[in-house]
Length: 278
Image (cartoon, rainbow, N blue to C red; front, side, top):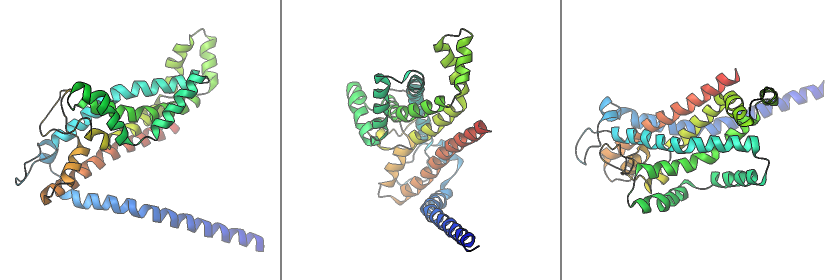
């Protein structure tokens, strides 16, 4: 009886300690969310989503070009990074038990730990200098390099979860292995892969350092891939380091918009993941 009470007491104590640790971990997160929402909510308006940035001393203005530029650059990154990342993950899962597969895994793990500013400098040397200009294409390349390693490893793990019976049944029907990988295995793991893509895109959309060296910024609308392009993260940086109080307020509102964008992508990924589990 005493041992049972002791075990229950230990269980209650450990549960309380875990709850306390969770509460302590949530304090900085909740305070950050409250700070961004409370400081940025007052500046939200329809014009802020659609207008161009206003010069110093003028009221109004917005970050419409930065929102469009972020979507544009991230779209370029997805066009480059998603095929390479998913393709590398499929190869590692299906044919990765070789020295080449081990080398690809090692490179992916190394790239996953490289700071994003280093990736931006590399993209600057490989894309910006040969083009002799900052551009949305350079920013998309930098973000794609950040996306590929994580997406490749996630895709590999998701494909390995597909039952081997599906592969064997497809091969037994005479379907070639490459078609089995694309039509059967990849389609089965597509829900989880879409979740990984959304989470990777959410991370790429919140990067600032690579875009400072690649796409830089633009005060106007731009849809040319070979020209400097605005982005929310760089716009927030420029507003935050300025000495003007009204620009600081715009930085808080821009940060709130970025938080909503990244949070929406992360939430969509979680919902897809939960639907896949069900």
